[in-house]
Each structure stands twice: as structure tokens, then as C-alpha cells.
Image 1: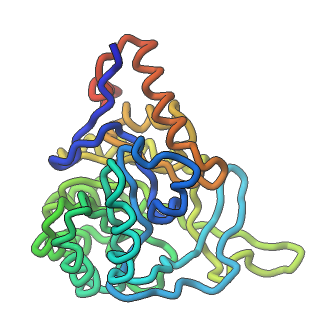
Image 2: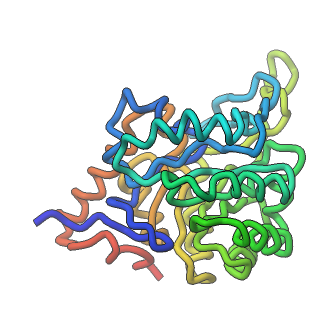
Length: 303
């Protein structure tokens, strides 16, 4: 008998707990020639704002040991183009759609969420209040408990889909931030976003990124992410989507056992475009080999 891979986040049922991480998978179309999107628990789109954003100057990506730094700056075509092009494309697939929303100010976030409110193809909203590469907004909202609670409330007032707040690891106490999002009415948490880092090009004697700093992602941050997911799972009652350095079933299962209901695969997609499918199959095999009937039995099993 095949194990039950399904999970539920804020009333939305996913066929399995594996989704893509925003900013690493386009909005689905870009990777659709490499894998069957129907097999994913959910597609998480690239960040979308109320108006087009140009992003940061280049160079804005560089490799690091066991990871990468990026300073893309949430470049996107704006929500109107996103709805006509990307959401339209996703209508043909049997998978859930999570739209990542970004903004420079509370009104910008609210405007974008309002424009997505009646889109039936949007199952969940992931609110990015944690990008370290945007000079105004983004991380400014995500590092203060008061700011997190206020922006969460403002978004919940207008959202028609469940709201998942994406948290920054660049804080002193991640559990306090998680509790603030829950107090603001969040239906779930997404964590962690990238860790702020820097690389120097010693040959050119300058910064490797035009933005100077960037967001560190990949296996290098996985132990930090697992620890933070565990801490927040002990502090809040809402579901958590865990991410940060997931490359295979083992790293995904670590997140789930720490308390994540679902996981997102990010940087690994750049190395192998089919990583998400490998993670799904690896989790299924683990459940079969360990005579576990449902993935839900493993959520938060380590205490």
C-alpha cells in the first residue's frame, strides 16, 4: 500500500509536502520543460509586486562554498502582467499555486494582494517581508515584531486567500517574530529566507556583487534553517513551510521532523532542475521502508 503523502496548510490540501522556493523556479513555465509540474505539491512563484521592479544592477549572483549569494532585488514584471501571463499558464496544471508577494511599503503589499484576491488560480499567498536585497521595505518589516504584526494584519484585512508570512533569519529571536505574525492573523509561516552575506573578489579588489551584500542560500544555511523551524514550531500553532538548503529527501525530512508541514526546494533547482521530483520520491521511499502510513506522522516528531 502506498503511503499517504498529502498535507494540509490553512485548509489547502497538497498532494505531497514538496514545493518550489520563490525566486528559484521562475513562476513554473521556465522549468516546465524539465519536469512535470503536476507532480509537485505546489508551485511557488517568483516575487510579484503591484508595479514592475527593475531589480538590482549586475553582477548579482556569485557562488560560495556549499551555496550561492544573490542580490537580484526581486525583479518582476508587476502583478498585471503576472496575472495575464504566469497565472494563465498555470491553469493547465493539477498542482497548488502559491504567489509570493513583495512591496516597498504596506500600501504596495495591500494593493498587490487586493489585485490577486479574486484570482481563483491562487491557492495561497506567501508574503515576502524578509528579502535582504531591497533597500526600502522587505526586510525592514521582517525584523521587528511590531512591524511584522502590523503588516500581517493589514494584509489579512484584504486577502481572500490564506496568508503565509515569509520570515527573515536575520533577527535576534526568530520565535518572537513568528509569534508576532501569528498574532497578526497569519495562517502559516514560510522560513527561512536567505542570510545576509558578502563576497570579495580579491583579483579585482572589489565586491563580487554590485549590491555589495547578498542573500546566502544553499546547503550552507541548512542547519540554521532546521534550528529556526524547530524553534518556531515550538512557539506557534500555525503550520510552517520549511526551506533553506534542501537538496534531497534527507534534508527535507529533517525539516519535517523539526516541525515543518511542507518544504520548499530552492537553490538546488539551479544545480539539478529535477531536484523537487527526487525529493518527493525519496520521501515516499523513506515512508515505505520505515512502514510509515502517512507523512503527517513525521511532522514535528522530534521534540
